Amino acid sequence: MDEFGLGTDLLQYTVSGLTIGAIYALVAIGYNIIYNVTEIINFAQGEFVMLGGLFAVFFMGTLHFPVFAAFFAAIVMVALAGFAMERFVVRRARHASVLSLIIITIAISIILKGTAMLGWGKDPYSLPAFTAGSPILIGGAALQIQALWVLGVSIAIVVSLTLFFHHSLYGKAMLACADNPSAARMVGIRVRQMVLLSFVLSAAIGAAAGVAITPISLMEYDRGALLGLKGFGAAALGGLGNFYGAFVAGLLLGLAESFCAGYLSSGYKDAVALILLLLVLFFKPEGLFGSAEAAKLKRF
Image (tube, one colour):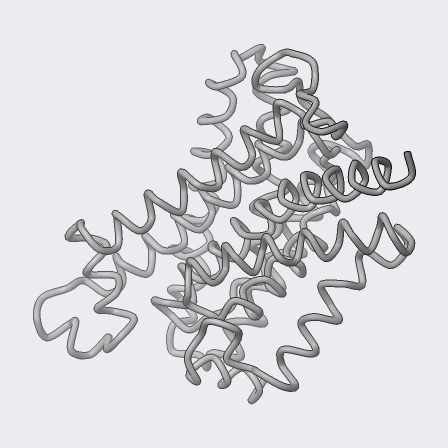
């Protein structure tokens, strides 16, 4: 019985870790999209996740939208926030240093958190699961139906981004801007439009992550900072700019956090991302799957 119980616990922690890790992966991918085009670390990315969940609560709870209509409406609203952030703040400071732009994103994250507190208050909110039904039992472990949605949304976004960047004109233009903005301008690519698109895409992906996880984990105005930190840890662990690296690192981070909470103490689980981030920056600043370019972060 003890061995059966240990196996069940291991499976349960694995399922939980993969679910939350998929969210960290999406946050990390949001960081990478903007970093690839601008070399800016957008520390407002966690607030995009938070706003996605809270906007979905508003559309479903107040306006009584169906669940999937609320999902896409929340993504549109947060994408507009990303548009406004780049168009009216980042673009006006485009001649500032990268470090100054990073500080600007931190200021924007504080503003977004304060605005969310005024709009939704300090209470946590939840959403109904996308699909009703009892958890699926696998070897004694319970798998929530919503966890499948989280994993499905994450995989769909990774595949869609891969197709977008390698098979679409705009995606290839964004990669060109990342490699050499000056050369991209010379061949007629509108670099400012690509930067704007990167912020919109990043915000939309963050919103999708926020809506997907809110039925499992409560969402509140100050949750974005911690999600942003863990997502940045996953981005650094996987290698800044590497989408598949971010996805794998996010899953690894979620698993490490789940096992820590299960076998050690839940009080330590939030420290896992910070510890891994510090270890990566000290010993392999380019990340597990990244290039040495990511080591430039050490300058900051």
